[in-house]
Image (tube, rainbow, N blue to C red; front, side):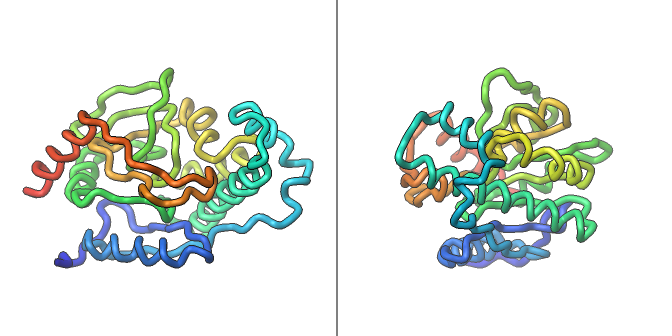
Length: 249
């Protein structure tokens, strides 16, 4: 049953990064928005395709060194280097679009993002809890890495640092220029740049409960592996409780 359309709480612009070669993923995202009953300025952003010679360009030497350090030497390194570069460029182009368009913030989604059915009720609460608060980034999902800050801010927000993954996050306009100036030169995947360089110096939040996951049983364009489900009892119990709790609002 399709719900009556609603606008996204407290933000107006949503960009879904989608490869031209994956119309199935864009269709899946559209179906998901329809099920959630959300409307507004949701647009597809064509992911950047790496040029054939990108692997040999000297400006990618820092990123190559980083991937070698993390993953070691592998026959898959050139493909991962291309995909990682393309992913970073795609995110930066969305930020550039938001800046040029004068958007006060933008929600960036990757096309393998799965949103929980209770996302809108939670985001409405988040909107109320942010009143009078300044923020720079808000993650709808991600992985917390040890060593970063993590403290409870409100019922549905944790103030965080060192959040990895970039499949669903909001960026405030005050960060556009900085991201565009720093991210490419950092020589890191975009989510590592955010977690290791940017988040320690800005005010970033994670929504509680987590609203966005990367789709399972789907081939990762960067890792070239199919994501398999990993059952974790505590996490699944939290999701069941959240479905019960927030479906009432």
